[in-house]
Amino acid sequence: MAPLSLSLSSLLRHGECLHRTAVFCSVLQGSHQRPCSSSSRSWRRSFGSVPLGVGRLLSRQQQQLHGASVCRSSSSSNGQDMTERLWSVYNQTKKQTQDMIPAICANSVNPNTIFANNEMSLRDIEIYGFDYDYTLAFYSSHLHTLIFNIARDILITNHRYPEALRKYEYIPNFAVRGLHYDVQKALLMKIDAFHYIQQGTVYRGLHPVSDEEVIAMYEGCHVPLEIMSDFYGKSSHGQTMKQFMDIFSLPEMTLLSCVNDFFMRHNIDYEPVHLYKDVKEAIRDVHVKGIMYRAVEADIDKYICYGEQSHAVLKKLSESGKKMFLITNSPFDFVDRGMSFIVGKDWRDLFDVVIVQADKPSFFNDRRKPFRRVTDQGALLWDRIHKLEKGQIYKQGNLYEFLRLTGWRGSKVLYFGDHIYSDLADLTLKHGWRTGAIIPELRKEIKIMNTEQYVHMMTWLQALTGLIEQMQVHRDPASQAVVEEWIREREAMRPQTKDSFNPQFGSLFRTYHNPTYFSRRLSRFADIYMASISCLLNYDFQHTFFPRRNPLQHESPFWPEDILKV
Image (cartoon, rainbow, N blue to C red):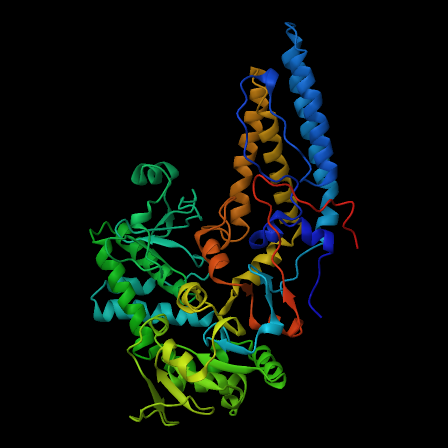
């Protein structure tokens, strides 16, 4: 059975599927404000979309305060009276939110759930495709340390960087996926879905850059479209922003930051563009020259984990008569060693087609590269490929030839991968395949959002935001002083929500309020997303995934809490 850890009413209360736990039956949902011309004609907001207890309290108190402001006299006690009323609303709202915490915590989100951006039924899926790295094979943290150390040593040995860089070690929790790097300014940062830099998440080297300096450099916090990275997150044609979308990019971001830190500490004048290109080349060499592959193959128990769950998923699909294929950029020897460890020596019997060194994302667009068969010994054969046969290994090729030879087209195909751009974007935009994103970080973030501390913090933050939104219309000095104090409290709380996930950059999915640039791309290119493919074990092949109907800012929910109870 599917892991339905939430009641129906709780599920329907979640306004956005990309942040379902952070909102946690949010005490207040934002809406656009209408300007008020004076305090005596203050606008009123419907509280139909908020949980009933707090919503009714705020609505009632708003009416009382509105009446008090209209009936205002010249008495000097009016300011004090209004201040007392505002703090009364504040205290009652805070008590209401505290009373809600146990019920919200009881409706925690199951980390093994599959989340839907787009409605999709497994009964329509006949063919399942997989990437290899971080989709079928999950790696331990030792791999990132390995990549960092090898690339650092390449910089020193091949690019003549200072020997003292060897003192730098990999920092496991420094960066998160989806960050942007300004190549010319040597700044690592998090950008939201609207191209705004999240303040407090800009780093030069290993140290934060002040908000004032960021605003001065960018003339605000907005990053213009023309300097953003291209479709695949790369920096080219004058675009100075590179986005790191690959899990393998975590060591690259950390190495860039460490070398920047070394140069700044020692007052060494350097060209940031050269540094970026050298680090990029060093990281590429770790993969292309096979250094990482050989190290993993030599000590596979140290680097690969989650093998049993991936095997169980493949076995379940095979026993249900589903066709399966593998398309990976990794070389055959590396994949064969890993899959033999995860599944067994007969792993190729599970797949109808196996393609290695595919060179994604070019595989999905470049029609010029033909398939080439690879022998078990790794030799390349020269014969023309007229059929993709089960049990054989193929190299390179292209998707158009793949479609012609297999006939596997459209929405009957579901492909899983961890890279939003290289694995999923072209398939959903150009070819109509269904797509599933594997987001290993999701499990950790959900567990954090399920904690009572986080629930309490987010619930009160939402309630406090609602108080500020509603009570700002009282323009007398006493009321404004109270609201300003609430704003300061809110501003002090917001960094705490960031620090819950990562002290430097926060959540992979959220800035303080908006979705991240990564999150917006995820919602566009992935029909479903999950922490690992093992989540498929919780669903049968008749299951339909439904996205939550997210109310637009001008809409109210149509599911009254009193009615939808099971």
